[in-house]
Length: 155
Image (cartoon, rainbow, N blue to C red; front, side, top):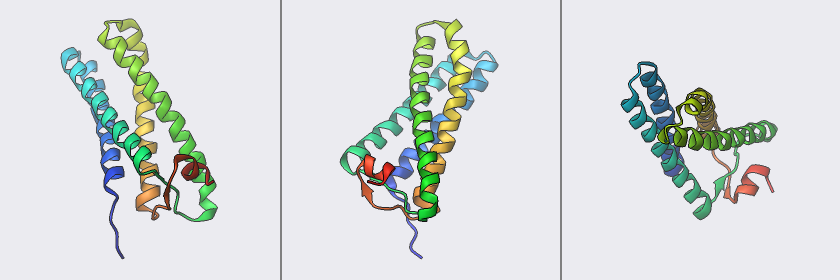
């Protein structure tokens, strides 16, 4: 059996995992009042998330997206899960940008309220992103690589 993982999705998924791990480290750091370390770690997490997004967006624009290649009776469940992940990722990105900016601008009252919410959203985004990756490339062979609309909705 020939089993190879696609390079760009594997790299981009690795960066989203790195962002989640660094967010967890940053959360621990702030709980220990290591403010400067927390700031550096969270900026690193944002850079990892940005690298993920650049790779993902570039691949989408220049190559396309991979459609679900698993069994047809699972496609509807995969699609619902994927849409949930996309909504979560979009929400997490918006919260992440706002949370990062409030921290950098010294608006700590808002930052302290948003930080835990943003972190939890981002952890779920990373987890669901890894599951999407596993379903597309590990558990099943990916379907055709095509436009975003066709890959998600099947037409």
